[in-house]
Length: 277
Image (tube, rainbow, N blue to C red; front, top):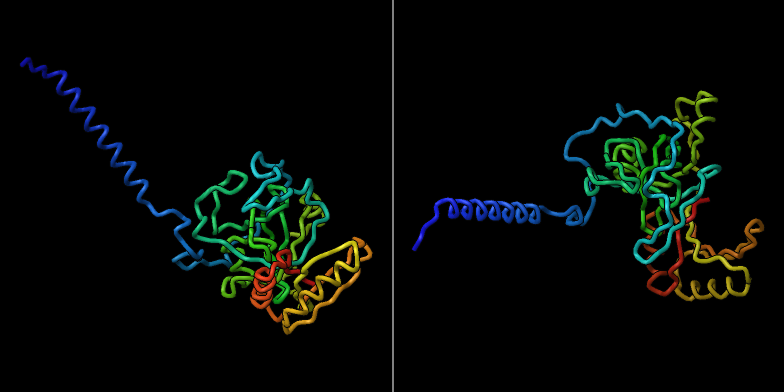
C-alpha cells in the first residue's frame, strides 16, 4: 500500500478544522437565548440613575428601519407619519436585561442605561417627554424601538428611565407621553423638564368598545353588567369622534385594571384597553 505523507497531513488538517467548527457551533447553540428569561430583570449592579442625563432633542431624519407598518402576534400596527401634536396618557412599563445589547427596531443597540423608549406607532426616532402622573417626575427620552405589545401598555421605558421616574419597584406607572419638536424645544430654551409639577388627578378606566350605533354600545354594556363585576359600566357619547364609548371603572391601580381586562378577554370581550382621564 502506497502511503502519501503530504496527502495524509492535508486530510488531518481538514478533520481538525471541521472538528473546531463543529465545536464552535455547538458552543454557540448552547448559549441561553434572551427569551429563556421568563421575566425581564434589571441590572445586577447598582446604577446611579441620578447621574444619567435626559436625552437632548435634536432634529434627525427617520431611521431606515422600524418605520413601516407591521404585524406582531397576529395584530397589525400602523406607524404615524409624524409625531407632531402627539400627547396621550396611559400605562408605562420598562424593559431591561432581556433585551440589553440586542438590536432595537431601528437597528441600534438597546442599552438599558440610556434614556430611550419603545412605542408602537411613533416615528423612529422621536423625542418625548414622559411624566409620571402620580409623583410629577418627568424625563426626556428618545424613542428608537417598537413595543410594548401588551394590550394595556402605552410605552416601554429603558430601565434607567423607569428608575428615574420611580416605577421600577411597581413595574408600571400611569404617565403622560408628549412628543417634542426639537426646534421649538431649543427655541424656548426648555433645557429641563418641570420635575416638581404634579398632577395626581387622574382616573384609570377600561374602554371595552366604541360604536357609531348607540344600541350596539348598550348591548356590550349589558354583557359586561351580566358578568357581575364590582365596577360601574357606562356609555358616553364622544362628540368629537362621534362614537358611543363603553367604559368600565374607575380602578384603584393598573394591576386591578389588568385583572379585569383579563376577565373580559376570557368572556370574549377582547378589545378592552386602559385609558386614563
